[in-house]
Image 1 (cartoon, rainbow, N blue to C red):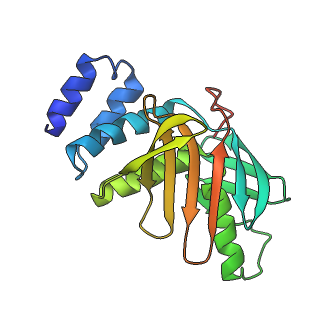
Image 2 (image 1 turned 120 degrees about the vertical axis):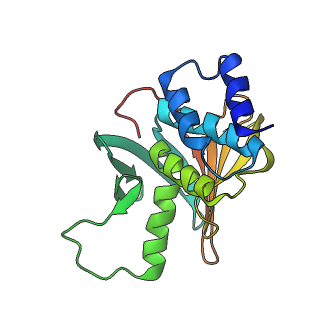
Image 3 (image 1 turned 90 degrees about the horizontal axis):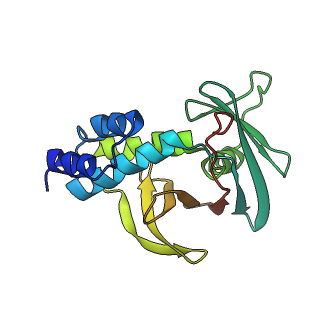
Length: 200
């Protein structure tokens, strides 16, 4: 099935009944990815645009960390963690406070990056998904079960570090996230999304 066929099929089935979905297809149909992945990618972009993350329960370095995500201004999000960490993201990029002039150790910097990836920020996940789609890489990487719910494993971002988003197979609602590099591994169960613009 070609990309135009995918778009026509989904429109006819009612999946593109909102401006958000139409916009998502307009973006994704131009990307160099296989047809099935283009379809899934377009649907997931629409979900990540329509809903907003609220946080997550993270397991990293053998510790449990709670994350709560808030939008503070347009493309600026603040993620606050129960271990005392707070991270500001602007356009899905970690912003370093101007007052922090100390050189960050590589391990500490990677841990902050992993916490950001696992914090439940849907805008970050959408940007990472589009990066992978623009690379022409496959995004669907198998199936899984999350708390008894059938899920798809979605690769997002670049190859390293490895970042996976597990989404409900039918609705594509994000359920969990996994981060993996040579030095660090982490996972998160994502909290229920919100339609409020105060979410991430």
